[in-house]
Image (cartoon, rainbow, N blue to C red):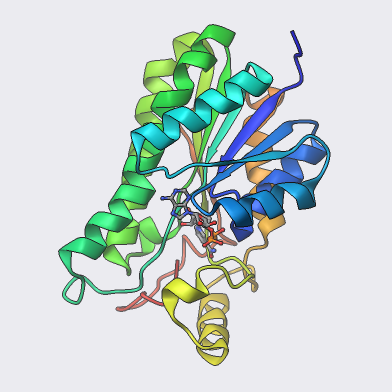
Length: 258
Ligand SMILES: NC(=O)c1ccc[n+]([C@@H]2O[C@H](COP(=O)([O-])OP(=O)(O)OC[C@H]3O[C@@H](n4cnc5c(N)ncnc54)[C@H](O)[C@@H]3O)[C@@H](O)[C@H]2O)c1
């Protein structure tokens, strides 16, 4: 059997998913990018090159998740690392948000990782090892964007439960919680003009002890650590990769942050 390790990254067509794929590929993993946006995901996998490939996956649909995971297992026979990275962000206060928006955020950000992890666990158990890594957010601590924060806190909590339940099979579960990342992903969702984005970035930097935004490499580095051999005894953690912004007071209103 081919023992090269395999990493499956959901939301793989997005800004951070591509960054994580790039880093894990450098670390020697076979990369599978999974995304609801099949064409963008295919382009992202081609850009990575080598044996990287893409699968279409809607993380909110058990049927879609199960068939995508089956495809990966058919191709490589194993999944060593799952990065639950697919996520959406909607900038609305509680009183503005309608039920449909709330449900959509929770379906993608929280139910999605539940379904994908459930689909991957049997292979990890059979291998006697695995790494579950969730991308959550510093936002769960800071507040603002309540549905988003609640979905990410829920994912931190799922991570702790996975750590307790799956340690017996040598499967670790950890979360990486970024602050705002210095690219402009999610701009469409946030519906911001470039000027508004710059103002939001300035505000985020002013609240960050290390005076800059996160880079994709900062976040991918933390993912690579949790995936590594050295992290084999680390489980149930949420690592804030946030320049210290998780420590800083954010004032009354934090909807400009994520
Ligand atoms: N960008 C930031 O500043 C920031 C900060 C903290 C946390 N995060 C988290 O990082 C993760 C990646 O975000 P990003 O910045 O790369 O955003 P992005 O919008 O660039 O990428 C998100 C990807 O998820 C995919 N996706 C959406 N719905 C899906 C579904 N139902 N099934 C499968 N894929 C789906 C999208 O097609 C997209 O490719 C998210 O979980 C986000 O919450 C981002």
